[in-house]
Image 1 (spheres, one colour):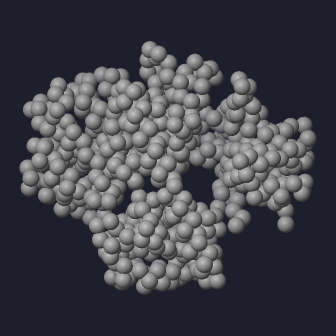
Image 2 (cartoon, one colour; image 1 turned 135 degrees about the horizontal axis):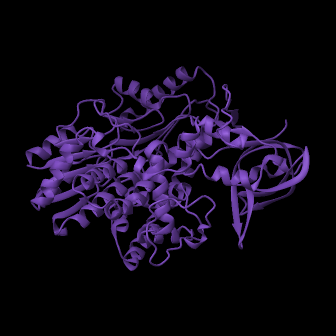
Image 3 (cartoon, rainbow, N blue to C red; image 1 turned 90 degrees about the vertical axis):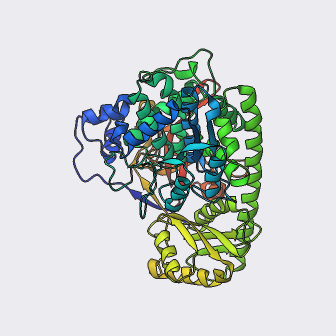
Length: 596
């Protein structure tokens, strides 16, 4: 299916003093950066510009209770979700407290088991805390909906500090303190923190209140915050951009053992210089950073290399292994855990590949049916990979998708993961099915959700969901859209432009890597790499003076159309490609449009 390209329009005049390059000025203006002062803050993030953590509702109470636990040598349990955000949150708070406490025996952590506990704060986790004489639980990346569980903890004599970033959708738990910027009564300015980001704010507030060195206690934790921001797909704006910027700097200049070993398994060369001190400020623009690393680690590396490996631990085995990797201090210990996690990730990839192929066969078998949705089920699929399969099926067919398997604890209960397309609120569709009594539990948002149903309701649910999708889409087939930032000629592409675009990083939601389109290009050379990717040497029909190499991942099916030697259009990211000490401009091609 051809993707629809939409070129962003700027209806207002762009201020002349925004930037000397009109392409960069337009990119800035599109992102709501309209004055030279805002440009300076955007390109030169400063840690002192993060918000005061005490602006968050209940922060004073949380810091007071944590300090009392530290002073009285109470036992503390750090509890978090089994995904990357939860794992980094638990690791961050644990590392801070381990440095703070005189007796580390008073500190522990708990990651719920996806198959036994399900999502969120579990009674089994509270029982574990009670059995280990814990009097304070810090619950991270979950807990805002745990009304019953928090009451259960109180009955056990355990105080709970909730650090969450999800919507409450009901009563706030009666915890000792509830930190969540999305609380309706919370005045905190940045509403888009990750769960790990909320945990960071807690320990940062503690440091401020008790005059601890930020350089010693806070700055070394920013790599974990950056990993959570990248992996949890939160907007990279406001203080998230600042935290991500400095966190990536730390990853690049002094990676912790857990990061370094996983990068090695992902074939990303991370260089760890001896005796290098954390840089309190970003280097000047144009600084040669090769003294710090061979390859600059980006948000993309965190999302596609570290994130899946840490997630795999919780999806297939035990998320506690991922925390152990993040908090360990010795390279030999990190190497052992990283090898285990990498093997688990390989197992996860095999499981989701098999399930995806089986799901494709189910859909092909019903190719005669005209359906607006995809709903598939197989009892043999692992609970931990149905979300990945749902995402891949949505990408393949671009229609609302739900993938089901059986729950481990009850074979008559199906666990499903849902993914949607632009313009369709899958949460509301599932909610409508729940109103008809077809769903036991569900949660999520408009583009992704999780649910459980009874086995006997599966076929009725599938048909009802299909009907709702048809009614909402009004018979129109959804089309995947790509938003283009600007149209360029090859003559406009210079090393200076590429370097300026690079300064927009770190990239993520609300600050995506700029996408450009160039029309009427031809290929001087074209070849397939590993039967999946294309490597091209491109020039523009209107001007033959410049040629650029292009790489098009997983687009080898376009080779025959390219070989016709007729002009076509390309949509791409601008990037630098370094090889054997030489750096050149490369077009990372995202899509191509060919003449009919």
